[in-house]
Amino acid sequence: MELLKFEKGRKGVVGMKLLEERIRRDGIIEAGEVLKVDSFLNHQMDVQLYREMGREWRRLFDGAEITKILTIEASGIGIACVAALEFGVPVIFAKKSKTKNIAGEVYSTTVTSFTHGNVSTVIVSKKFLHPGDRVLLIDDFLANGAAMLGLIDIVRQSGAELVGCGIAIEKAFQPGGARLREMGIRVESLARVSKLEDGLIEFID
Ligand code: G4P
Image (cartoon, rainbow, N blue to C red):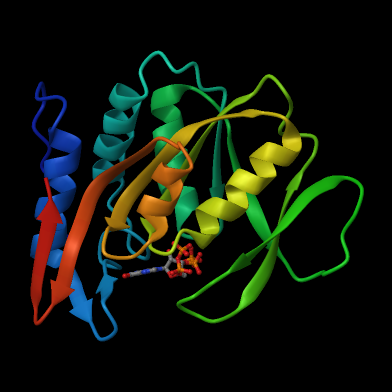
């Protein structure tokens, strides 16, 4: 595996441009406007790239006084953990639960995957999110926004404050990003893909 060679000292746009360059180099466009990035992002994991992404979110959310990072299993976990090292806060991952009737000790919501066509119940223990927490949501992809809307619902139930969303790859031609921004939510996507067809990939700067 060729690891990312990051440039020391360069800040700011680095996190974004590095991810875009890596997608151009190693991303594979599949049928149905699916971008395969499993060689570096969500199967084999280039954690040095993750570190640059974490640093970029840290820079973007500087001063936001984040106390917790919240993600959803599975692919968000690794990215969120490396980002959390930059913020110095714990990571919570929402668990996809097989049990439908859950009550009491957990916040629970449902997430409908438009890609896979299934509905999952996701849960977070009430022990780990409270009023007074300031929460950053992190995930690898933002497509239709179902996962983010589920996490937002969990933050709302907990009484914590939602600071924003840190997304690795936003598929800007799908409605998730617009939906969240219309709700007044701050969304910081490190790569925004505007087009994904005929072997061509275009980004929004
Ligand atoms: P949404 O959360 O934005 O609504 O996503 P959507 O339902 O459309 O997609 C369902 C799953 O597919 C999500 O993962 C999402 O991250 C992933 N996904 C969406 N578009 C792409 C794509 O172009 N490429 C890849 N590689 N993944 C995509 P998930 O079901 O939560 O699974 P997990 O991988 O996190 O476990």
